[in-house]
Image 1 (cartoon, rainbow over the protein chains, first blue to last red):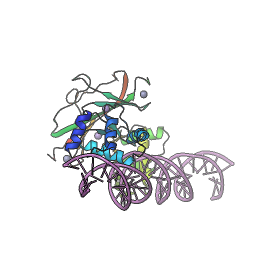
Image 2 (image 1 turned 135 degrees about the horizontal axis):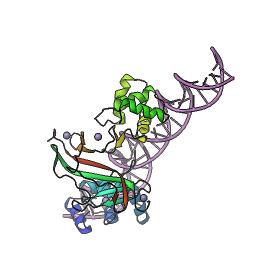
Image 3 (image 1 turned 90 degrees about the horizontal axis):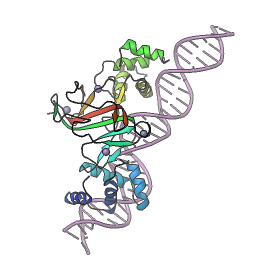
Image 4 (image 1 turned 90 degrees about the vertical axis):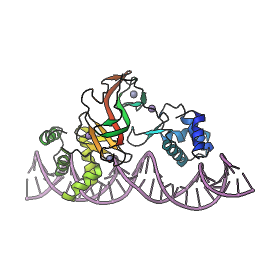
Length: 138
Length: 138
DNA sequence: GGCGGCAACAAGAATTATTATTGACTTGAT
DNA sequence: ATCAAGTCAATAATAATTCTTGTTGCCGCC
Ligand SMILES: [Mn+2]
Ligand SMILES: [Mn+2]
Ligand SMILES: [Zn+2]
Ligand SMILES: [Zn+2]
């Protein structure tokens, strides 16, 4: 996700209205490193904005994903996690405590993935998910 | 997945009964490179075994996954694909035609992933999914 | 042969996250 | 001020998976 100013600038220029609900979701997500679910976002914001509805959270998340300001991650079976960091990075999921940890590979150090083609197929994105046991649980 | 003989040997030794339903699912999966969904497996086997039930397919798949004879893949939003190849390989998903293509990285050639630790967290498995446009659709 | 225990089964209901729909109301942008 | 867009609330639709319940068929034992 871009900065608050850049993000709302993008929304404005794409013709979206800057409603308080949308702004609250955006403010919640900017700088958030916890990969929250829609339910968690709703639960947290509901405290401050008691009239917020679940559909609005979903609608806003889907809208933000469409303009590439967030990405949704399929890390668990039954729900999605949302990540405001749409840059190239990977995730580690602890099988024991379910925590999600960002992995930022330094160039060539830990993870190297092909750019462009693999046997004639054009790669446009790559998702890498590690599963294991986190530092804390070890 | 192992050979038919090895697989049913494992089932026998783990105390599972070799029922016709289970054997039909196993036979369906062995050597299958198509990453079928539970629904596809059910639909195909239903022709030959009209009394087969959906839950039995699911139960059998879960049982096979537990003893590591298949793996389930979260490649799409709403369903799982099952892969009888539990060896280390990755997947390419075509955004246009939804086809799934196996990627077998030769050592160090295209993909290299860390074994063991990443900043103190113990990695036990890694899932890599490429998305893009396949040879056919290009 | 008859019986009890038991795993697996079929059928379908239940669950659950997400998406879609409705209709009345509110609000942001011009 | 106007009005299209967004919101809320409630509810329904969707769809993959899991759960429940009663039934079946096999096996060992009397
Ligand atoms: Mn992340
Ligand atoms: Mn595969
Ligand atoms: Zn942990
Ligand atoms: Zn294709």
